[in-house]
Image 1: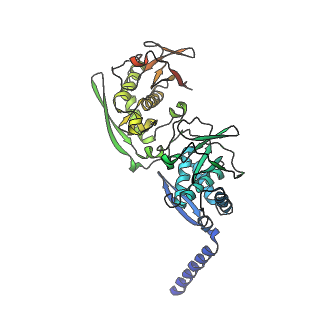
Image 2 (image 1 turned 45 degrees about the vertical axis):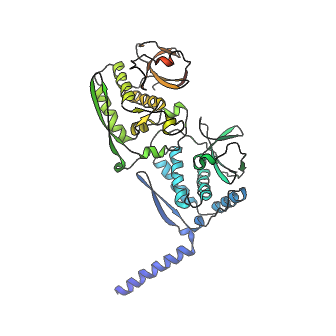
Image 3 (image 1 turned 135 degrees about the horizontal axis):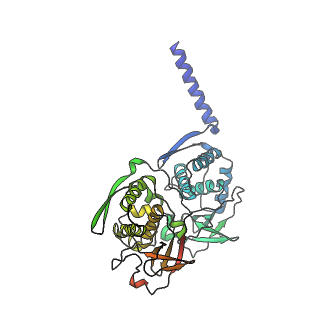
Length: 400
């Protein structure tokens, strides 16, 4: 009897195996980690059989026709469902698509095919993404209404298309060489891509580590044990230089938030609003080393507030964003960001202005310098080298 059962089970297994290979639509389940979560999708031979011979318009067209006829819908449904469930902003959804493309076609083995997978799932997700070829390079662009300062772009029909894979080519990317746009009609495209980050992905708790920081305020040392995660640096590795409204509103992950904000609230409890902001200003100014981005990264790079907490050194943009975030979280006061020719700082609106106020939209704001200067500036004081320079208000915040 047992032998008959075993033979029946083996027979079913052989039948299932035959059906799978004979009918690729049955699919195969795969998964990879996307930070704390596992992303699971189903693929089959109709996906893996799609080829890309070269970075040419004809090859791109062939890839698209083959993929459009493949069993890609289950993968697309997994992507869009994951995005909705975990509330992924566009930037993190693109990171998910990057990992999917890597699992389908390793970047190091066939870069063009890897790029085409990214493009295909972007357009099938509704994003207006375009491909261009230049000197054998396959360049991926996406339509965006955001203001981006450090990436190549082109304009078409009144829209701006931002390059998504510029960093992969480095110095070999020649912006002066003409490109050939691959004109492929994809009926699904209707969305522009946004670089706004309103929520970070969930990270694995075991990837957090403790970081000790300290600073002195009015002769007393204050110590903090931050919970930081290098995954945050990874997700912003290729994040572009965005406008200050987008940049200043990047949040902090829950674990890092819980290790810092309650402690700051405790230390500022009982202080007047002005003295509490002064405390936050000096925390931001003296808890971290100062270094210009161009020295560290060789270019302008704006760190998110959490990255400033993670990294050992940062510059004025980074301090301004962190200080803005802290004041917003703890006091939620109106603020403006002032950009000078080579500096940026923040001014806060108090009930009574301190020092020489900055008039904006009928209200006066007090300068609060979060970046180390030659002298220990108090509230309302501006560095001497900036006092006679023209400034521009690049962002203003009014609490809801």
